[in-house]
Image (cartoon, rainbow, N blue to C red; front, side):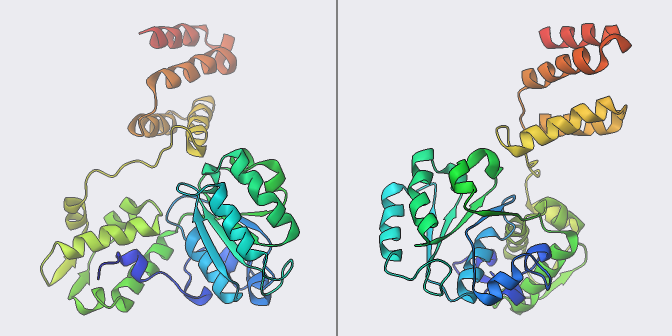
Length: 304
């Protein structure tokens, strides 16, 4: 029982895979490719904990391909070349022998590291599957991006998370033996933020620190976890999405929404000077002469 719950109940087949029905459902964009074993090079783009690595593993298993995996955090050009040399012994493009090379956090690869993949992908020595939490248009070099199909994976819905929780209760060898009564799930689902891995980690933490019978309630969950950290990346995609939502809320005369997005930025650790600069630009370009005092107020705020 050394493995975390998320690893113990990781789906092994496409039928067990929860969520992303737009990709792997009955009419999903990838379903027919997987069934036929004809897999193009892919890039999976989405937030953490939504099954990018799991889906890559399932694709390799369902298509009966050799599977190599690298983490961009700890691997370099040498590691890539070693795997490509092994893969050269296989067949050609889109054949059953064509190995799959999965690279997690591919956006962390430098330009030269990404360049080292081009020949192998172009000649079909490997089928590349890259996983990234950042926009591939900005983080993956154009030459490699043009050789891959980009698919967006979404955060788990409430129903997806509830289904996952039920699977853990019924199928995990350790959890299923415990006397657990789930009375409330709102706090658990909210704390997960659509992240399946986080949901299971929190649930396992609660279960492991309580004596049976264990009654899962909102109060119990909140008592076991620290204040939930807002999902926010000061240098990534969310940085620009949230500030854009903030500006649009002000432009649309929606003060409640503006306060919400402002709170999200502050809670996420955004630089106050960045927010003040954006408000200064907003007052100048969007509000302008409609309310001249807005620029004065924004400037005073920036200088304060």
